[in-house]
Image (cartoon, rainbow, N blue to C red):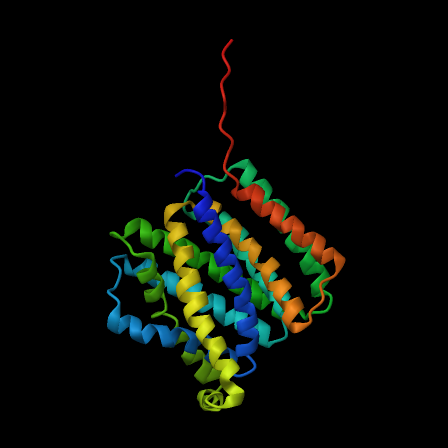
Length: 301
């Protein structure tokens, strides 16, 4: 597979913007729903029409289930719990992007994907930037929310690899259909966890949102389900089908730049100068890791 085309690079940036705004939607949604219930409901509203209307992609069941458990269940279970436990919105968008390095490493270890020294260097630069911001922000955040969000990032990385394997071993896989069928897996474990941890009263949150004061919660749910899951994840799945995980995953490191910027403007979170500089380092690392390799030009005399 060759270098990422300009069109697909733009699509990856669009996904980063949509997922950056996703954290604002989660923040709003958690003001109206309990975390585990919100995560399960987000998938349930897509799973029901998917089973009824969308043909199941012809992929091995183990990879479809793995995709749903990693990307749709583990990621959002721990992310929502982390934010509910006090993880600031901007910091959550940053820490979750540990999925980029996780995906790169898992792809190299489990799929034997070749990682060039330039990619390792770019990821290393980006991780340094992420680490600097995490150190600054972690001083005012409890350790548990950070750990929960990191577990969510690991789930995202595992889901990335499973979606790639599903498309590799499947037959004429439609990325959108694969993304939609991924949502069939998470509702049962997430809503079961909600029933045990949050109790049946969590369903009462739905009733309270059907009021003028609850419109924001419903809009957040729509964004989380349709925009962040169907549109953005569908594009992301298509990119993972066309390119090795190491070329696609670094673009996810642009998400915290968008997430922290929106958190500053909309929620009043104020990043420090160190965080802004580190954010620029993250962008630089992404560009290094995902830039096309230079062709060697032989000169004859």
